[in-house]
Every structure is written in structure tokens, then in C-alpha cells.
Length: 410
Image (tube, rainbow, N blue to C red; front, top):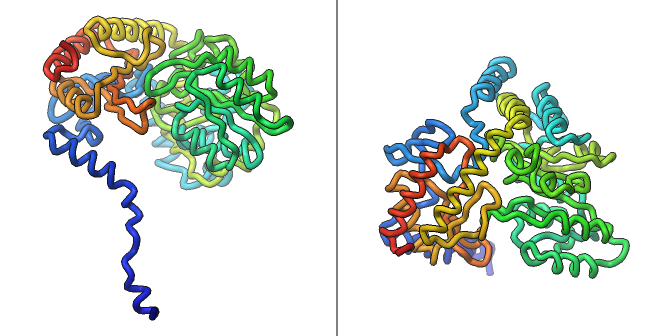
């Protein structure tokens, strides 16, 4: 075959692997439903309200758990930093990308968690990617819950450690996996405080005890519990009395803190070396000064957020009980976090219900496989401490109307 013939050969379509998903999406849109994954918020009015499709809509799918996005002090801090330091750093943390605000943000995290070390990343995804891939590498073993977040799995793959998954929240299965790991091998157990799809919590007290008995280090992702769960809002590990046994806590600023970014806190005496060897930290531009300023201000205010935490728990309990009474199938028997998952019969019904809720003036998340466990389609509701009691009542009425209109409830 000539060189010309070779160059004329058709290239393989590297996107062909997505054809089944493309077909599924086209079939869904052919039913007339709006695309639930391309909603545009034309204007955000508050932590709980936005203009969507030209009408005021209650937000119940934003992860803005503590409602800090419109806090006056947080916004003022961001504006000051923008005026004093400009719009960005144009460099990584190990070069020119560490400003005074980055250190102040890390100091706020150390005070919040009462820990010795804190490391701020550009996103929560990068925090998991960077820390996991750096501390567990080839020849090491990572034991993790099968329902772990994508960033956790990607961190495992990037570090080339052996991945050993166990059934969701199954203490016995986790112990069996740990017992099979060769003696002397490096072991890391990765858990989440709150699992983002169903909103259920992990039995961290028992799991961490087993991990330590097998000589494993422990990393807990508290992305969906920071600021809300625990006496000081430090998460499920604090709430269950085992935070001192956790080697690394990962979190994000994009939930309760109300901005963007990620972090890791730890008491490990060798922690600071990670700043020189963690690739997603070393080779990524640092967060803009305005972002770390808003984060630091928000974190310090969350240290005194007990009233907000109490109100958020009230909202969660009321919504969970109300939806259950209406006949909806929920992801957990009892309210365990600020996430309430409403399980749908299938994707088509879920999309119809999502659209009906939007028509009522309510935005929730439509979640589908493979992001969801056990192939479920669900409507994921994430409550906010700024939702009023009246708004929770409105939300229940909207769910009842949409549920009956779509046949999801009788």
C-alpha cells in the first residue's frame, strides 16, 4: 500500500463509544421534554431563588447548603480582593500563585478543623485527584466504597494503586477486603461522610476502627457534610467522634462554603512535602484572589453557624417526611443529610417529573446512570439553610402537583 493510500484511510471515530448515550438522549428529547442537563439560570436572585426560563424559580438542586453565596461579608471580601490583587494569579501555588489570601484561607481551614496543616486546590475534584494519587501509588492498595465519587476513582487510577472496592456502606465487606491485602503493603481506606446521590451517611466510627486495626491510613471526603453535620460543622467524622483518627480530610468550597475550590486538612507530620510532589497542585494555576477571600470569610463565619445548621436540619426533616407522606420513594428511610433523593421509576418518568417541577417553579437535579448507584434514576433535592419554612411548604405542594400530573404518585 502506498503512502498516499495510507493517508486516505478513514480515521476511526473515537467518539463512537458514546453512540448509545447519544441515542438515549435523542430518544428522550424526541418525547418533547426539555433537556434537563442544559438549564440556564438567567439571573440568580438569592441562595434559594433564580430566574429560569423567564420565571422566578425555587432552587432545590444547588448544594448551597449554608446559603453563603449572597452573604454580605463574603461578597465584600471578594470585592476588596479583586480591587487590591486583581482578577487572577496567572501561576501555580509553587511559583507566583500563592498570595496572602491563599495563606489566610489555609489558616481559616486549620482553625475550622483544629488541624495542623491545610492545602488549598483549585477544585474539590483536584483535591481528591491530587492527594489520593500522591499518597497511594504502584504497589499500594486503596480500599474504597463502590459508590465513591468519580474524582476518588480517578485519583486511584492516576496513582496506579491497586483498587479494592467493597459494597456500599458494608462494614463486613470492607473488613474482608482489608484482610486479603498482603502483609506489609501500603493501605489507604477512602470513605465519604455523605454520599452525594442518595444523601446517606457512612458508618465511619466502625469503618475507621477496622481500617486502623489493619494498619491502613484513612482519607474521608466530607464535601457534602462540611459546615452542616457535626457540633462544629466539621462533618460526619466529627459527628461520630472519630475525626482524630482520620489521616486526611478532603473537602470543597463549592458546597457549604459557597464558592469554588478544594482542600485537604491533616495532622500528618510529613504533610507539607505534598506541596512539592502533588501534580494537580504543582501544575495548576491557583485560585483567583477574590475566590480565596470569599472562601476564607465564609469558612470563618461557618465556625459560628449553629443556628443555620439547626434550621437546615429542620428543613431536611420536614421535606423528607412530607415527600414520604405524599407517596414518593426516597433514597433513605430517615433524613440523614441535606440531600433528599426521590427515586423515579425510569429515566423517561424522571425527565417528565423534572420538567413538571420546573413548570411549577421548582428546580431539582435529575440524576441518571452511570452517576447513580444500582442503575437508579432519581431527583436529587439539596436543601439550603436559607430556605424558609414557607418555601419548604411550597416545595411539597409543587411535588404533589407534579407527581400527580406525571403519574409518579396516585
